[in-house]
Image 1 (tube, helix red, strand yellow):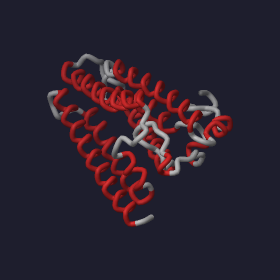
Image 2 (cartoon, one colour):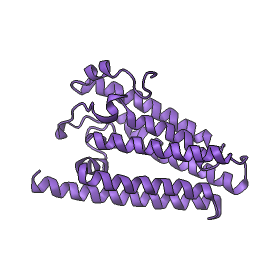
Image 3 (cartoon, one colour):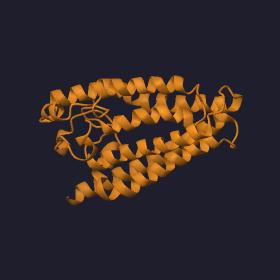
Length: 235
């Protein structure tokens, strides 16, 4: 790697880190302002889960995938027009609407209490989902924030790690994670925005898969070998 690329990667990683810190602070503020109090176990558990996985991501990915993190810090040239709409809907509407509804639920007690065993199971599986996404990121240096063919980075098919099992392991982890977060937050009402977010994720998965099959050399052949998109042996 030449000095120019190394410098660009360093700036990109720094930008990515700042974005993560800012988003974490915004999440914390929205969570507890919505709840109207700090004494909320579900809110703190959700926040701790995200801080832990983001810190682990930095530890694992910065030494190994700095170029990928730099790529994720901006919207790259050639991003599909439909993804310029879907990405903010999923990351902003999806995340913020779930935590706002859950916070209001915690404030006004709309939901009955989530059983302790179910809550712990949801928290642990949500952590496993985050680790699956991290595994996918560690295996795929083209794991961009938006959907585009990264020709300038020598974009090619990745078929190692979790990509041997399904074509979109990152989405697989994200879908299940979004189905569990309302339980972690202790809000059944938060399933309304969470299910809408999952629907958007499924639409994006299908559109991205279609794009890759049409535009990325070798992907159609890979899809014939790894036939399932999200769930091994099912779909």
